[in-house]
Image (cartoon, rainbow, N blue to C red; front, top):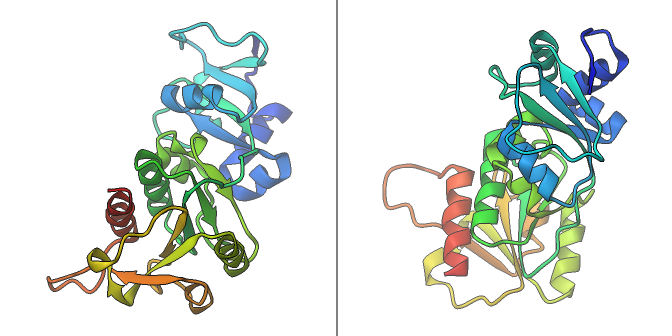
Length: 248
């Protein structure tokens, strides 16, 4: 296993660039950190290009022999990773998600907070949804913060990134999907009639909700009851309530 000790090494510089969206797009790769995320990557359909180990870290299981691995001293490993206290292992993974497909989908309309995006994807995975469509303006799924919030669920869901979310939703509607928009002026969510799959649930921007152009594609518009004094719910919380009730 080759050891790379310089921060100016070309490979190290390329790996460090993966913290930023520009670097991820230029290289076509992203970085996952920690034992669980590396295990999830190795078990997924995503091609793992490289494994990175901090000096002194001992893997619990033998590493795949067909994947190049490099040993990094602590100062180099910390510079490559985004977390303050890295676990000693990371992986460079190819940006190659499978497209969102299946009877239960979510669509995110400019959900900008990385924690919200990661939480929604993790909850969708837990609730048995199949994939997510992410409109331009959403937090980058492959950023370190979103990846950490997904806890590996990014590897379980199909992901699509339509340039025009309304057009993608119109296409799903033409193929028999119910298009459900979550909005404050919708019908009461818990009073809805049964909605069989296939369907796609739309979650909107934290401040502005679902955009008018996306609302226009909906077959159903729903709101959650709020008998208290709060004016709105966190989008991640609202998504969890709605997703779980839709599969109930």
